[in-house]
Image (tube, rainbow, N blue to C red; front, side):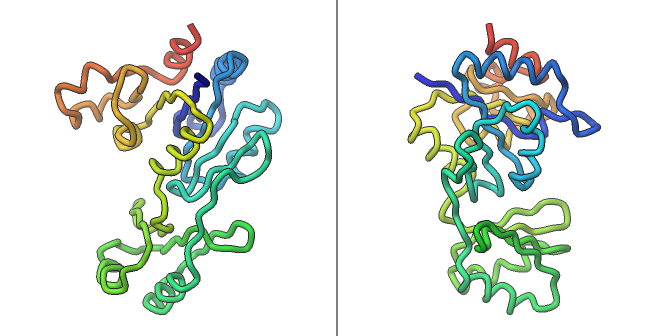
Length: 218
């Protein structure tokens, strides 16, 4: 079975937002052994692609909480999920005094960012209108995407379509909990272990990403 490694982009970069040569070489060795390397990120896929120019290492980018999957090798979208214009109009009319940033792909909106907004302020509208919206709170800002898919569903589309065996290198238990915790899934933040059920703790390996990539490469 083909193998896929999925990791959060923040795992790969250092404080200077650079990827070390050691990490890149480890990824390259794995890809030569037919591993596919998938990046999960909240950043725009074009920003992540800028890291792929001089030393290609990414096969897929999953972004905006699963709103889209970009096939880097074939330079096309494997999956793309837009917000409906009807829902966008309802939200913008409801939040007339808020700054709303729209994110476009192919001239259609796939994500809204509402600055200085709490999700509880939108709950009434979403419930009353029965809108097809996912919402995510990050610091002071609220992000909205279509609820036709989320990160887990989007990744599963890719995995099932390509029939991959999956390894998740999670930045936090939030990422790792998208899939069944097993000996193939890694959490890199030791502080999150206290939040896991006791019976699952034995399956979480606390290492940095280079150690995990080395282990997978053996």
